[in-house]
Each structure stands twice: as C-alpha cells, then as structure tokens.
Length: 188
View 1 (cartoon, helix red, strand yellow):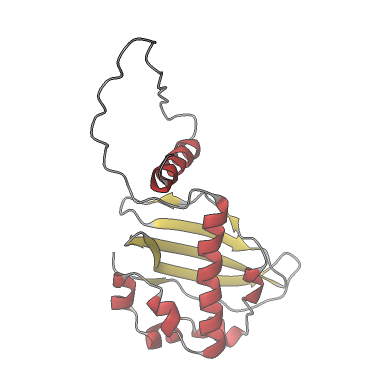
View 2 (cartoon, rainbow, N blue to C red; view 1 turned 90 degrees about the horizontal axis):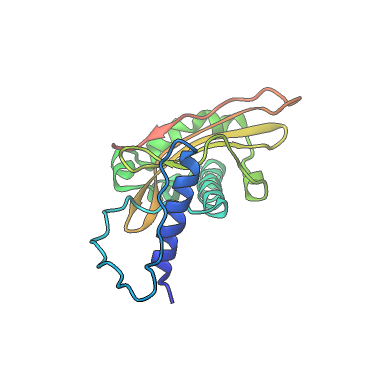
C-alpha cells in the first residue's frame, strides 16, 4: 500500500507537469526486463511544499478564506481572519489594521456569503511562486456583484496559511455599482 503522503506528492507533481504545458520535457520510467535487477534508488530530490492537487482543495482554500473575511466584515472582528494567517501575515497585521484595510468593503455593504455555495472561477491554475507561496487568483461569479480575489498562502507545518489577501467587488455583468476592498500582504 502506498502511503497517503506519497500519493499527495505524486498527484501534485502530475498536476504541475500538466500545468506546465507541452514545452516541458517528459521522461518515462520503464520496468526492468525480467531477470534483471532494479537499479538502487537514489535519494529523492527536495520537493517544494505540496499544493492543492485538485480543484476541490483549491476551492476549499478560496472558500474558507472568503468565509472568514465575510464573518470579519459582518462582525467587525478581524481576529480569526488574522489568526488564519502565516507568521509573517500576523506580524504585519493586527486585527485593527485589517478592519481599517477592509473598511471600504465593509461600508459597501457587499455580501460575501454566496461564496459558500458558488464555485470560484480561477483565472490561472494554482501556482507556487519562487518563494513557494501558493497563489489562487479568480472570481466568484455572484450577482449583483462579482467577488474578485487574489489570495496567497504559505505552507506552515503542512497547512496553507494566508500570507496575502486581496478582495474587490465589481458589478457583475448587467450588475450594479459598488465599492471595493484592499490587498493586504504579510512579510515576504
């Protein structure tokens, strides 16, 4: 039986190869001919932190972050949103800082609760930047406002933690005019 961690790493690697496109060189592994010994395995190359290996995991990260933001905007208490952040994010942002930065979103009266049931549309596949930050960029196609997001996450103890969050609302096609939010970053 293959350990679950190995399966997750293999899925992430396969997804990375698929996302890289046709310009990526491909290698094939062949089983040794009968009667021949298999070559001794070499030490595994260091790997980047695993990133969501399927759409459901990416959707979960986007939804859970947006729901935490919705609750913060609704209650005026940004403590939980801050606590979901990476150490750098928490060091750079107090709950009061986040309340100020998302004041326009709060004052606009935007209702983000639809993110709980509407699937996000990613404008790019999830990707790791050179600092190994996971990025999710896209929108929730809600009415009368669409909710645009630019989220970054840092792997902390095998959990993706918010390292930057940017949210804006815009009139959906044939929608109404509304305010916006602000991108909040943590330390890089």
